[in-house]
Image 1 (cartoon, rainbow, N blue to C red):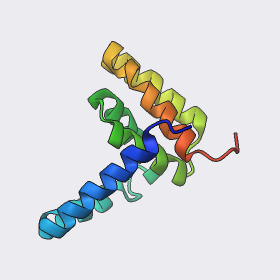
Image 2: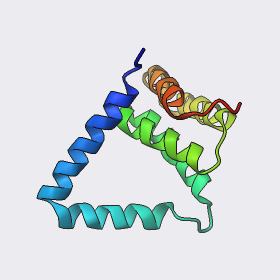
Image 3: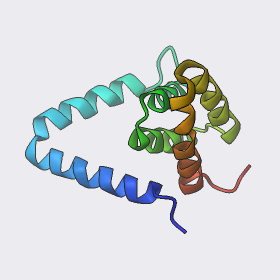
Length: 116
């Protein structure tokens, strides 16, 4: 059974492919900026990805939620840390943010390995 996250990530990748083909300079600049911002510095990459996830939840962007749940896990983040971020996002974003925890659940089901 699909939870929609796999399709959302496919749709996102397809759209980004179009943008790279039609606006390569802009997408290259944005990609470079993103890589620079998210690399280890005063805050490590995992912490930055957790912050990005919290912001994605409050911004109500299912694509960003999927991307950043996956990146948190790739950076060594845990299921428990993601749930903590969800709690803070609900505090800051209220009911509308709370409804987007469904997308976090979908992303965890899509990207998380059974190592809890």
